[in-house]
Length: 139
Image (cartoon, rainbow, N blue to C red; front, side, top):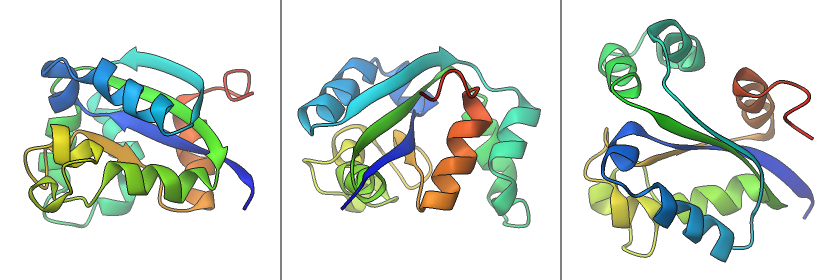
């Protein structure tokens, strides 16, 4: 295993519900180092650019609307095998099927409003962290 960085997003549903602190605590308890964190609201153009890989999918418009519906918390997480470790901690995309000891199992409510996002591969993590954090913020 190697030390990796990955992007984590606390999505608008979890921020709105006041669960950011609980999610950050789960992240820290799991042994991640939070290299950078910021709270922001995404514009439509930012959300469309970030989720460009889903542009042809029928849920794209709904996803963009959801991700711009309120603030998000963006984090760069670092740990051994961080990408898979964060995905395991998040749980399955469909929050209704996620184990209760995962982020989505505790704080998500559906496949769309599932509390969190995480990169799925090293190439995706590199793109996603650079999308939201400058080179000076990624150290």
